[in-house]
Length: 543
Ligand code: NA7
Image (tube, rainbow, N blue to C red; front, side, top):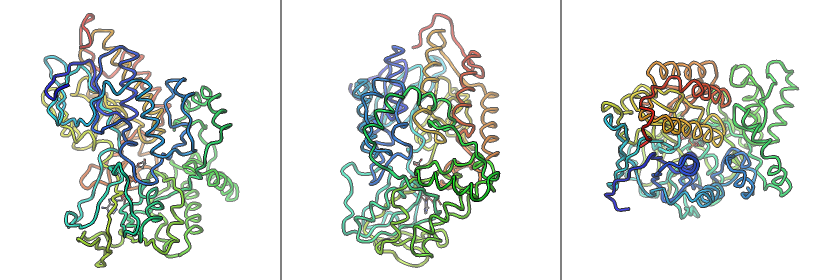
């Protein structure tokens, strides 16, 4: 296709991560629609394409971090470790792209700059950075919630003489830190995974920590052949459990309540989860997210473990999170994170008490002290949820810009549609469970629901499908109300936009659980898409 071709299809899907790939497959291969995918990377995989930093792994167990829509795919793919590495997950994404022949309908290395809805024709026109124009009746965004890197603006940053990296845009060829003095800024999931690996190579590592994280050991291990075979035999049964789980995991939620147990009973439950490894510890008790007092039982247990793992008491105290409940920020899952601070060549620098003042050519200045480094690694996270959408000029009905509509925070109906932007479906969008449950079942639920809506429009000759203002106002209030009943509001987290200066403090994802959310969405569809205005005649085609 030349750069000036106008492509006219039924659906445009922006993004070729797991959501975009599945949407493309379902729309094209199951519904028979003409679809084009647009992807800024040179390959598929989304998050797993970009996040190639050392130690990058999924914090959901690999056996559950996979598509369930194809039994053949389930049977032919074998995960090698309990928590898969980034290269293995990327290989899985590439395998899916090959297996379902997705690449032929994806424009790679293509950045979408603008998407505009035309009221007269009820179509979207998408303009790409390289001058292409695409048009379609429906536009599906599958941008990922953590794909717009957040790099704080430190004075002097442009004068730094060494190399700089962001974990979410890591060089494909890898980075050799051997013999280098390195500073990592940020101790969220990405920093915590990368730090032990960088420390092992670097001459000296400075970890610049603003907020200590609660991190738990992954206890990663190779998957035994029998274990894999057993799961493959029981996949349907396990997928059914996932379907019934608010978190999208094949384990029923805990019924234990921290405050109803004796201290010894509570401790024993926590010890069992700590030994099991992974993020399970945060869900040991059913009231962990509902009561600060209950939450303190788990938080104090993890604080004690940090004191045991870190030899220097002062460093241990600096690494202990104190000012927010466990789980209010996403819990981190690590391998040897705390032990890394027992190395002589690793220094923890607390940038909460004395923030980073500026960057100089030779390093970083904190509290008047110069830390001389050769490399700076920004593990500073993302402008989550709305950041990826904000990068595109999305212009809806009557010339309204999505960025302007959402200037006080995102307003959506079911986290998938927004009034004034007909025929736009935002996969895993703001106001849907998105990052609060296992991404794969979250993605499958959203893609399947969105595709069913597109199919409904086609079958009924509808040319315009639009969320109603009253429905989105009610839904957005509901999302906030559910979060306000939890401890999730009690941390300055990216769930609330608190990591991006000037961003409205609104709790964005839906905290009511994936199962409940699915029921609501299914109910809306069963009621003829209640809350949507559907326009069109019986005989019109989709595009
Ligand atoms: P996170 O979890 O947002 O972590 C970013 C880290 O960077 C966090 O420790 C921040 O501290 C720190 N940060 C951000 N800005 C600054 C400034 N200006 N100064 C010092 N430190 C700063 O991003 P990740 O990439 O680690 O993880 C994102 C998700 O990906 C993760 O939850 C998983 O779902 C996968 P703060 O806490 O804001 O004080």
